[in-house]
Image 1 (spheres, chains in turn blue, green):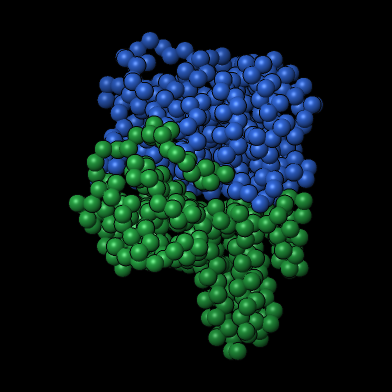
Image 2: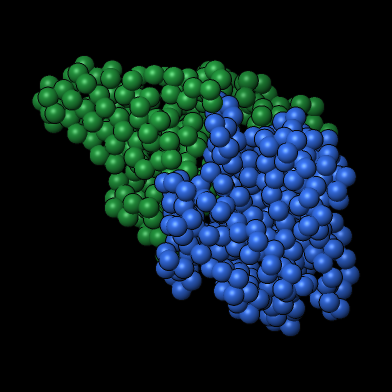
Length: 333
Length: 293
C-alpha cells in the first residue's frame, strides 16, 4: 500500500519476473544480447538514483525480489509473467521453479502465471493442462517473438494458438498477456502489429487480452483495436517509466489510452527487474498532465490512479482488496 | 574520384536512406557508425539502438544503404556491415553476396518487404498530415476541425511541415496539386464530414507513436554507444508554432532528464473544444483497418 496526501493506494504489480541471465546460464551470444538490451532500457529510463550495476541486473533471486517489491516498493500483490527463451538460456530466462516456490512461500502475495508456446502442438497442450493443474493458472504470458528451432515467432491467430486458447477457456485460464517482439514468420510483416490480437479477442470474448507495453511501439494500432474490443487491456510495462525522463511523452501515452480505452482497462506494472516499483509508484501518484497540455488531455484523477495502480488488476485476478482501499463509489466507466 | 569527394558523395547517398519506422534518414539518427572511402572502395558500418531491433527493418536499411552507395559513379566496391545485431551474421552474409531479401532470410521470407514499406509510408503520411493540419488550426483559430475537409494543399502556408507533407504524399503516390484536398485517407479520398474530428484524432495517435518511438530509439542508441549523440541531428519533424524545425536539442545523456528534446515541448498541437468520443468509432463507415494489418 502507498499513502500520500490522505489517500491510500492498493498496489498490484501486474508484470514481474524472476530471471537468470548470468553468463553461466547464457546458451549463446543471444542470451547476452537480450539481457544487454534490457539493461540499456533500464539505464535509459531510470532515475540516476535507481540505476543498478550490471551484475545486480543479471540475477536478483527471491529474497531481493521480495525486498524490492514488498518491503521497499509498496506492492501488495505481484504477478509473475515469465518469458521462457529456451533458445537463449540453458534453464530458461524466467526461473519457473524458483518463482513458483516463492509464490507458495508467500501465500496471498504472489500469483504465478506460466507461458506456453503453441508450436509444441499436441505435446505442449498436454503440458499446458499439467501446468494449469500444478500452478493453479489464472493467466499465461505469451512472447510471440520466441525462437524455436528454425521458427522465430508465431501469431495469436495461428491455428495451433487457437487450440491452446480453447484449452485456456476450458481450464479457466482467463487472462492472456501478450508481449510482442521483433521477429515473426514471415519476416515480410510488421512483427509488432497487433492485428492477431484483434482476431483472437473477437473470437474469444470470454478471455481477457492484456497487451504488454500497451502495444508500444505501435500505440496507435493498439488503441484502435482496444477501442473496438472490450476484452483488450493495456499493460503499462515499459511505458510507465517514461514518466521520469519524458513526462510529456508519458502524458500523451496515458492521455491516448484513457481516451481510446477507459480507466478500467489499464494496469500498472514495473516490469521488475527492468525497473523497481518504488519510484514508479511514487512518481505516478504525483504525476500531473502538464498544464499546457490539459486542453488536449483531462487531468488524471485520484480514482483513476487507484484503478490503474491496483484495483483493475485486482478485479481481473480476483485479488481481495482490504476494506478502505477500494473506491468509495465505483467510478462511472 | 578523390577519396574526400567520394566520402562526401557517400555520406550524401546515405542521407537518402530512411529508417521506415521512424521516418528519418539513418544519418540523422546516428545509425552510421563509420564511413571510409578509399580508391573506390566504400565501407560503411551501421549500428542500431539494440541487438533486438526488428531484423526486417535492419535488413531494409542495410540493403538500401548498399543500393544507394553502389549507384555512385566512383564506387567500385561497396561493403555495408551491420554491427552488433542478433542477425548480423545472417544479414552481412546476405549483403556481401547481394542475395536479396529472400536469399538472405530463406524460409523466413515469403515474398518481399514492399508491403512493410507501404504500411510505414502510410503512417508517415498520416503523421505529416496531422502536423500540418494541427498547425493550421493553431494559426487560424476561426477554423473548425470539421472544416478541414474543405482545406486544399494551396491553403497551407509554405512551411517545413507543409513541405514534409508534400514529400510524404509524393512517396505514397498521392496528388500534390494545390487544389487537392489536404485531409485524405491512404488512398487520397476525402473523409465524410462527420468523421473528420475522429480521423484527425487517430492521426494524432499515429504521430505521437512515431515521434515517441523516434525519441526512445535515439536515446537507446546514445545509451548503447555513448559517442553516438554527436552524430545525431535534431528530429526535423517537430515543428514549433511557426512551422519550422526546432533547433538541435537532442543531446541529453542517458539517465538525465530529457525535457529539452522531448516530443511536444516545442510546439505540441493544442486542440480546443469538446473531445471527440472514441465510441463514435462504431458509426464509421470504413474503419482504417489497414493501420492494424
